[in-house]
Amino acid sequence: MNLHELKANFNRVFPDSGEPRFFYAPGRVNLIGEHIDYNGGYVFPCALSMGTYAAIARRDDNQIRLVSGNIEPPVALSLDDLSYNPAHSWANNPKGVAKLLTDMGHKLGGFDMYMWGNLPNSAGLSSSASVAVLTALSLDSVFGLDICPIQRALLCQRVENEYIGVNCGIMDQFASAMGRKDHAILLNCGTLEYEYVPLQLGDYVLVIANTNAKRALADSKYNERRAECDQALAMLRKVADIQNLCDINMDKFMEYAKTAFGQEVIDQGMRMVTDTPVPAKVKDTTPLTAETIAFVRAYHAVSENERVKDAVKVLNSGDLTAFGEAMTASHMSLRDLYEVTGNELDSLALAAWEYGSIIPTSGSAPQPKTKVLGSRMTGAGFGGCTVSVVHKNSVEGFIRDVGKRYTALTGLIADFYVAEIDDGAREV
Ligand code: GLA
Image 1 (tube, rainbow, N blue to C red):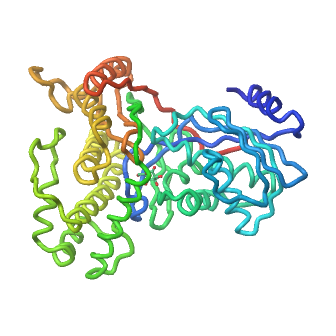
Image 2 (tube, rainbow, N blue to C red):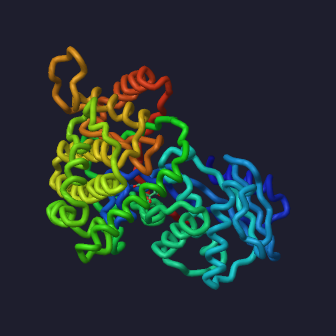
Image 3 (cartoon, rainbow, N blue to C red):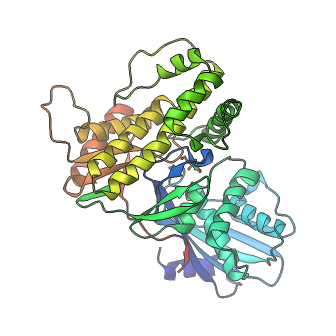
């Protein structure tokens, strides 16, 4: 949809409204550093050229009208009642932004807002962060609130945490608000210090593949993982002076874990650690205790944080092969230790690894590993997307063969997008 069409749609749904202004906020893809933003770790996301657009005009009363070109229902409400309402479905997200802004003492008036987006829904590319960041930017601009982009991102995270009830970290909102064209953001989620890193991929491109799997219970599983990390942190804090799991490196973690968890827990947990692309067929079948689960979740967080730092170093030195290997290792840890992948994401990653000869397919002679350098799930998991580093001459073959293999493994059809890395939220 171009701006002309956006304006035509705004005028069609709000024929009595004023002249609108136009805004855009992107979705994101995270290259590495998964499930550690809420553990004070480093993440490495980039803003996409797909996102959500808004046309918005102020009104001179207290009414708010919200209409989406993608999803029902249209919603009309008053600024005087911004409480969460299940019947308002998607519109609770922009409502939550208005609610927190007014709670902070910002003076809003009524407004008409039409939104439309081109991000696949529930695909782990942060469509919901893009809607929130878009709303925050739009309201900030039309009501002259003068809030900086990082504060807007933090506000949108609070909307998810306090209003919607998902205990997410800051990564998605930060990436959507602060993205930069052709750069990834190395963000320290403990301090919010960040650095733009040029994405110099040479002959390679990023291909996003959508499992199109239904995401069941994703929010409750997400909150469960977060609670497991909190439990691990509480246990470690009995023996170590730390604020976040990612405050320590692997050596320190293992040292503290001995006292905090005990050797038996560590031994059981370490049996879950595999470093092979194909998971061990038969694992220890003894049910894991809550302590062992907390230990392996924390092991993922600490090791993933180290992987991000190493990955950015090798990327900066031009070693794309090592960068791809770190991505693949990240997926394995999310599969075996954090347990947020599931059959569809694992099948899609496996298909990419096979296509790139990262793992051999039965009977095939060894191939040079140049078509795909790495592949992993991105975002929260439980369905959603993978991101792969693919040679530009192999993109067509990748889409064809990985798509076929994924369908053979799952019966589902994947969608593929060559990612374009773009700027963050802005007026258009
Ligand atoms: C979701 C959350 C983020 C982050 C990722 C996992 O996208 O919104 O805060 O935790 O999952 O890395």
